[in-house]
Image (cartoon, rainbow, N blue to C red; front, side, top):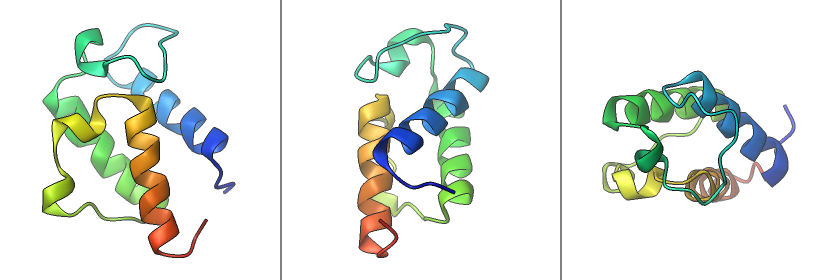
Amino acid sequence: MVLNRAAITNTITEMIKQGVIHQTAFGEDEDLRELGFHSIAIITLMVNIESRYEIEYDDDELLLSNFSTVTGIVDGIIRKLEQRGRM
């Protein structure tokens, strides 16, 4: 698995598209909640991210605001991977 910002962004975008957002295109900084990405979809996304990237979110990171944009989600993943020396 390639671990760089572009690859992670593409993977997260595809995960979101497979969720409840039925738009084919959305910006990396668009508020996903305004596009219909609700709390259940965000929890599902978190679980999928933890599984795919072998990371674990701490309780204090489980805020909707941390998962409101693709950029924010990717930044969080990269931070976690860097902490573990995987990027």
